[in-house]
Amino acid sequence: MHLRPGVAEEEIIRHCKTGSLKYQEMLYKLFYGYAMGISLRYCFSREDAVEVVNDAFIKVFNAISSYATDKPFKPWLRSIIINTAIDRRRKELKFQFNTDLENAEALSYTVTAIDNLNAQDILKLMRQLPAVQITVFNLYEIDGYNHDEIAQILGLSPSSSRVYLTRAKEKLRNILNKEQQNHG
Image (cartoon, rainbow, N blue to C red; front, side):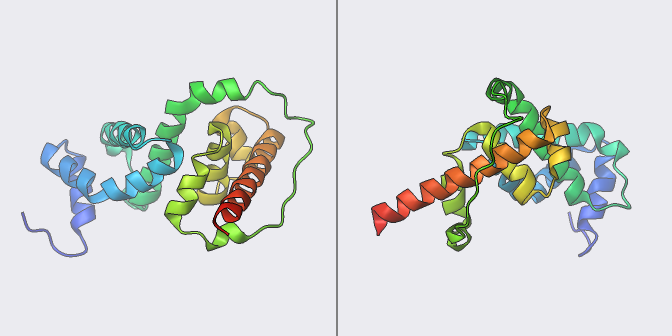
């Protein structure tokens, strides 16, 4: 099949809206890498990330008829992937919300050494965080959600979201310092 350059994505989506399995497979292959990149940030194993991607694409194909083609596709897909990953981990995260963080003191940090790491190094470090911290960190720092939005998504208070983010950054700093001491 030959698609004209520059219209491939639009044409694939149009055919997906008709339920074409051939075009659904093309869309899956076209965005698989993008979807995995997002999913790996929210999942602790590659197997979980693959399951999230597959579940997200099922949701995409079930909802694609309601996708507004005048809007960019990637942000729509990204939100489905993030929501799928969070839904998958919601039970695991629920147990971590049992600690009342409303009045907890925020930790502060000034280290910026994490900026010098590559993406794989950062993913390795982040996998050492508790699930709720990595989720809040991803939503806030990488995907651009604010604390009110994170609170709504995860069912916690905005102040708890802020504390989880601060603790994630503090733990990343501590892990990074230990790594540097071990290699320095």
